[in-house]
Image 1: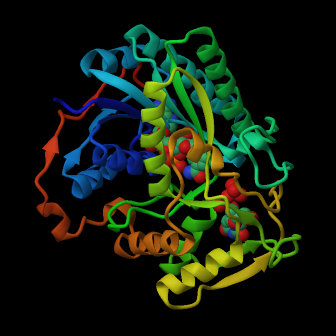
Image 2: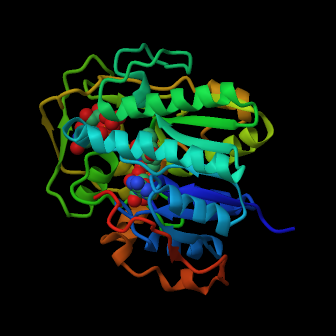
Image 3: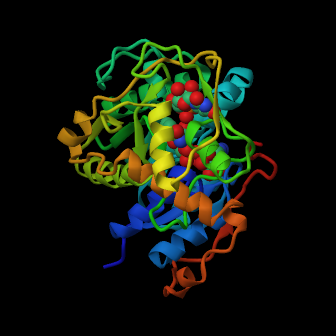
Length: 369
Ligand code: NAD
Ligand code: UDP
């Protein structure tokens, strides 16, 4: 029997490419739709180095209805994992319209195309930002929506759209996964995070300081009411997150309705605890200085992670030391990201390509920059 094909929007990105690895390991064939606005097609070659299967890449925009129809017509897709979107909180404050366009209108175009194609199983990349910054931790899925920026509001609106859809039409099975702070890299060192431009987030900043590409980490505040004064987050390994998509997909395919699930470890770690774990991984100290608080930062939050376990048997298995060890292995082996050639031993795997990569753009120039 042929492996079921899964459309992975945004599948060339950080979480998407790791999700492709997990899907292939679970016996699925990913078909990626991505504009590559914040990613690199070579991530999918690295997926092939790890798994022996190179996902099809369709260069196209999730807002483009005709492109979506062509993808569904060309590939016998049985479900969709929807990760395509814009994700920088600060940028969403400055340019909210682009965020509503890509994240909200993009999801609307996607579910309309899915409906036309008769594909009604969907896993959606949501975010802990839907909770805002004032909920007591651990935060359970029952906490109210209280996003404090346009990015978070686009995620909350998409969840509401999908909830209304699932209520109206019992043929849909939908899982919204609220990620906390995904970090780490594939344990092979072949696949990891390579942000375009200076990193906003803690882990890519740490890895670039460790690699000598930036002078020192600036810790954004050490006067919070936390274990050591620095901000606390629920860091979760990106491969655990990737495997969470597979478990949620199986659940959504079997059970009509909608499910909201946190993907976190249920434990918080401070900035200095992350730095210590990273120093253990690279066996030397990391240059840092304490700076002022970052405007808009919440002091501390972490997930109540029991819901995903109860609903679809997923829980995070990898700890902070492994997250840091894997991040460092990726950075050390690929200081220039995907510009570095994959190690020779990785290319020896037999490769299977589902089909040729292609471009399905009905509106040239429509892609977001
Ligand atoms: P990423 O930027 O690496 O991946 C997003 C992908 O979507 C990129 O490959 C980008 O090129 C693509 N894309 C953007 N606009 C598109 C469009 N209009 N059409 C098609 N493709 C488009 O980010 P990521 O960290 O892998 O995040 C994936 C998803 O997870 C996003 O929806 C993000 O909001 C969500 N999320 C991420 C985090 C995190 O910390 N990384 C946390 C919570 C939620
Ligand atoms: N942080 C920091 N220095 C940096 C980037 C982040 O001290 O260069 C801190 C930040 O203040 C927060 C934690 O690291 O307490 C996680 O920040 P990140 O931006 O990765 O995630 P988010 O705040 O969006 O959850």
